[in-house]
Length: 100
Image 1 (spheres, helix red, strand yellow):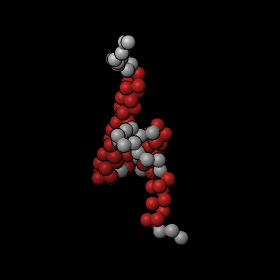
Image 2 (cartoon, helix red, strand yellow):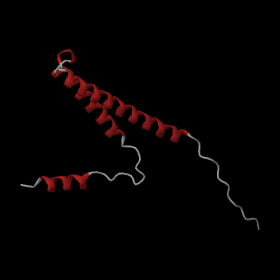
Image 3 (tube, one colour):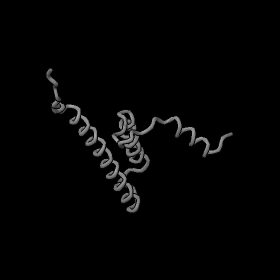
Image 4 (cartoon, helix red, strand yellow):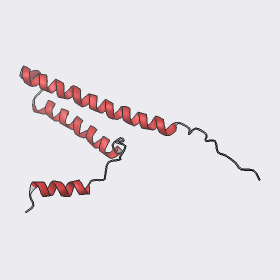
């Protein structure tokens, strides 16, 4: 049986390396995070509807809901930014031509 530490090291080795420039997450990762976030919020609503939540639970729930939505906005903004970069035409480069 492997220890938790050994298992996490194996997992770390299986993951693809992050880009050195700290670029955006892969598209499938973004989709997974957004789906899991919405599933979590839906599960919380099913588990305990907001109208029966104690005030302190409702405060935490509203905070996590807001942070999840802000996270989604950040992902969408980063994807749009990348799309804009790809659509920009590259600037022409000057090059020296030697004539004989």
